[in-house]
Length: 623
Image (cartoon, rainbow, N blue to C red; front, side, top):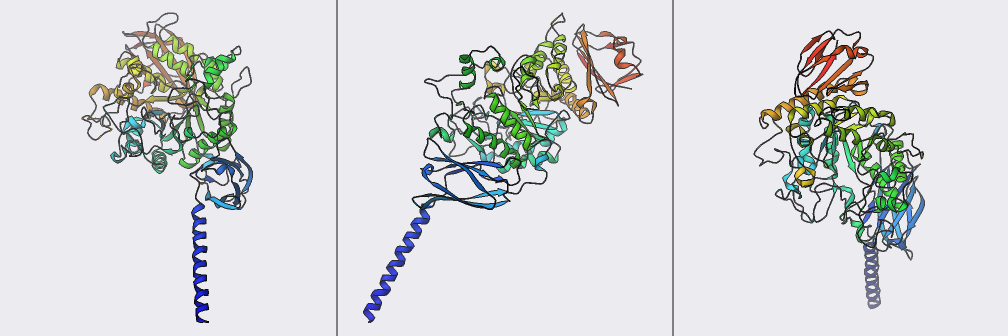
């Protein structure tokens, strides 16, 4: 009997080991998917459909089981690659919390994961975008300031920091921006547009940020997602909005999905490398040849940047959700959309409409790099276009005025040269649905520095910046203009995008301080700061009407006015003092007795003849 009992207990012990081994093997088999994107979402969003990209080995042949209160599966799509599953959920009745997803094969769970719908922050749907009350400071994070030396090099990432290489990574980061928010505020700016901070894990040319390799992750050499969220919060405390640069036309050649594309049409593929023609005019041309249109839309922007096919409806949804995720997660106030005409325009309209329905007070500005108002206006939302197209974008960059600015201050006065170019460009504002929401600029990170374009003449730069800060629209300035940084595009983008002096601990000069700037730089810095801090509180310079007079003898005079006040701007681009007959402007000056120049403090009585100093801008409050 004792022997039989011992045998029985040994059997039970062996059986328990087998059961435990089976359970442990089963648990080990239930791995988490390698990726689930978006990594989390929110309950209570305006749009109730949520797409999840789930990536794991052979997950496409599994069956999904989902347990979540108020969460319903609408559609599950397996694609050409067996390693993807796209899950579409209805979350219209879902509440904040976690739910479980199990992926089974032959009645065995092989993958499972927990997914979270977070509670939205109060008021997140009604966050304010940037607008004409703002002035934008453009900076390139890698070249602005290195606030955290510990993240300059990341072991697993391909490109390392090398400041001696103009086209390499230099170590600037998110912490560097945070450290200098007061500098930007004191200069008078109320918004920052930064070049992309999303991961660019490629062998070279990654500092600019436009070759994304992971749409949901900040590049570790710049910081973390939490660091980015902290930047937005710290900037908000100082009255500064953050405008995030986004790109939907292309990704990086080393993006994680390029080794295993979900579908054969995820990116535009050619037999040989085929570059876009950059002919943006083909998009609006009613007579365009399809071959030319295809080359523009489907050609790659660069050998390192595969062209995304937004007509793949799965990819389109992925990109749309990604932008909403960043808005909701980080609290940004705006999006700058890179290469707006290059993706399919119907997709871009769907995207913008989706975002603006989710955030009605938000702002998106599109980069439609085209030379004529008739072309750029096509891309601002609400335009009366010949084909009925509506982009839904509140703002676009005023590239036609940019071209006029870089020419007007270098040319002698004639019928069609000199300051008349500013007038002629603005006179076509009737083409825009809302010219007061255009972003006005003299340069950016892709073109010659404004100071260089103006022959490195500080007087011309003062004239141009005064115009940019006081005409209609939203003014923008590229970081470094305030300290007279120079650069020529055709000599190399890296040289054109030099580091801001003082942004690195070992820099011999710190231009973030008055002591670190020379007298000429401080004079420009003070001019910008005075104008922009004045502009901050002047509603008349935000949305006041614009009345301008045809320039004569290279003097441009215009007025910004509303029911409460009038500001007069005089731009004298002559190398000599000029006598100005003020009676010509009587329709704008009637009822006023004089004026005070807010730049110099000088006062003027009466409106007869004024002596205007050579190469001088004047911003006058009428009294």
